[in-house]
Length: 336
Image (cartoon, rainbow, N blue to C red):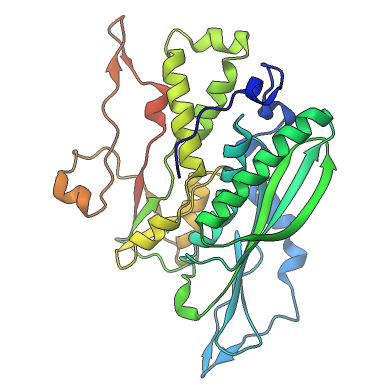
């Protein structure tokens, strides 16, 4: 993904104060239905009498359905399974092109979390806010679509259709579909003690984008400007945006054969702990954070061991201080 110039509304003949994130009221985990509530709402879908165990060469084909981010459905044609996911988010960054890329990466990440690295087809779901002026719509929405398209092509697939509607808020999402053989995906229930669960995106992106929006809200910015600089906020925001727009595809390709279980982390994640519990919920194992460890040497880094952030720096008054940027960091957990 090439580095682009920061989005400047005036370059597109828009008002200098134009902010994409103002076309939604909920962000991040705020737009997620709590897991316990969701499970109750979906109870009726769990009983599907049309779903019978499919067999191929005497073996039962794996099936994954309601309650997970991705479905795995055995096809009528022997030995093949449909792996499909759908997802959408609201604007969390102000650059329309990057928001399009983030939306696409957000959809694809659920396939990658299943070990699937090839996507056969994508659809795009687009809600255009009826609060946008005609000029804002005509300038902004093509940038979003282009970002989504570019990210899909980087993933080796293409967008062949979708659905576009008017909506009070901007909505960005899609559907990702692929057809696989059983050895081309990983069922998310095989974690065992000793496995390392590696997050595919750094933690802290929601903090970074939220604080960046506070720069335009004096009553909020005044509360934190004594402990963080505007430069730190801008750097953290750019780093978070680039991380969210980056595909997890390379991570999963590079982890083949390693004793690590990739855990999907994305822009609208329901929380790291919830995603971490999924690979081990059927086996009743517990996820634990190993805590700070000594800085690994070059040899360990080459094997894929993730470095921890540098210690917090000392502030002017002598207190230990941690910048927003240092909250955007990778992490790993052990399974016990």
